[in-house]
Length: 250
Image 1 (cartoon, one colour):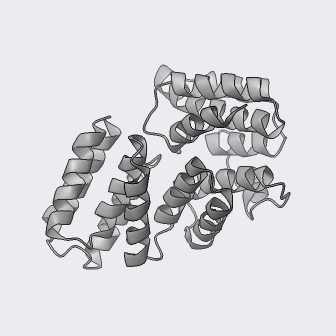
Image 2 (cartoon, rainbow, N blue to C red):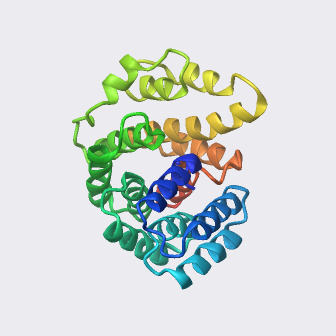
């Protein structure tokens, strides 16, 4: 949906370190990366403690703020997460991952107009090839549809057309554009080794659940969102998004 994309977080941290954004030097980068590893291993409280320690020494460490905000969403510290993500963006206003993460938090909170604004900003800033750029397109499209606005974000159709046939994000794009039926989409998610299948099923159940939600099929949406949570892939953003949708269903 963690970041859904820990490697991108690490890259962003490294780029900022090279730009001189870490006043405490390489050890701060190491600590942020250590926090990311804890978060992605499921030790969210431990990760937050590491990020907070970095911020005690450098209150303007944008990567630590970004990653602490992402982690806080996992344990429903939403007010703190929003404050951290807002501050991260103030310090580094061109970090597309920060806008994407804040857009997801706004969607979790039910602020769909605000989410659209952040997804649009992400689309404008994200570089070609960044993994979260593809997932941003998906969330952008789904949230626009939720708001009864039919325009699809730029690049969704191109993503489907240009990606390699075997690439997972291409299959997600085909499903969301109506080019791939749900049974085939879910079957594709279940293919491959057990670990890959579990990760893809987490995403597939969420996206399928959203299509049912948008068709006002609450029972179908609830079942698919629960199946998403049943995968236990808590590091993905879609896990948090699915968890937020269930209480809103009639």
